[in-house]
Image (cartoon, rainbow, N blue to C red; front, side, top):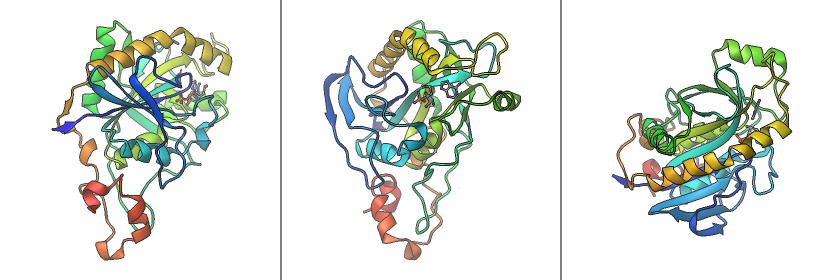
Length: 291
Ligand SMILES: CSC[C@H]1O[C@H](OP(=O)(O)O)[C@H](O)[C@@H]1O
Ligand SMILES: Nc1ncnc2[nH]cnc12
């Protein structure tokens, strides 16, 4: 059993966590770059919490400009074992209405302009992304949503697009033809990097719009996204607070191995590893690299 530290990445509209006790913004340095902001350390009940606003306070960072490696590395250095992303998404299905919450369990990664791995020349590793979302974490979120009587859908596929422009209608129809449920711009490579860092990851996707495929709805605009987020801020807040309050202090092993993803992943022979890269991997891969 490991002691749990709950990380929350706040997406669009979520730049702080009211209700966090003993809260303090603290800078955490990362050898991978500059995290989106300082981390907000605190607790809710007895659960230690580390919060990070993904786009920075004031929404300074575009989805392509976020240093996802620095964010995940900093959260790992802060001791985070479980990470919940709270994200605005467009709906690709009639039955997923603006205001609904979707606990996604799969991703399709269409991003192409972001560093997407900690493992580079000099230390090559291949982790499994077959099951990108940690089932025990989803269960705790599901219980929290039920306890707060917040309507939610369990399961769904999130398409991660590069952005920052929204999709064309042809792209939106293509994503629907893939059977995907929701679309956003940020959960990849975040989920891949969390897996490499052996952090359990799950997403609360908050539907804000019907993207641009729906004949009965105008194409998505930022104003619309913000209006829906504002209307649902209280629900999101209640969900996170309940999740944190009820979060189990001890941590059984993840059934899909999120917490030991590197056990058989590193291919580069010890003698061929690049010492400079190994030094940067101290937090992410310290468990298997030692030192
Ligand atoms: C403001 S709409 C587009 C923006 O919102 C989502 O961000 P996040 O996942 O951080 O909530 C979407 O991915 C885009 O970055
Ligand atoms: N329709 C959409 N496409 C991409 N990202 C989004 N975030 C919120 N709505 C979105």
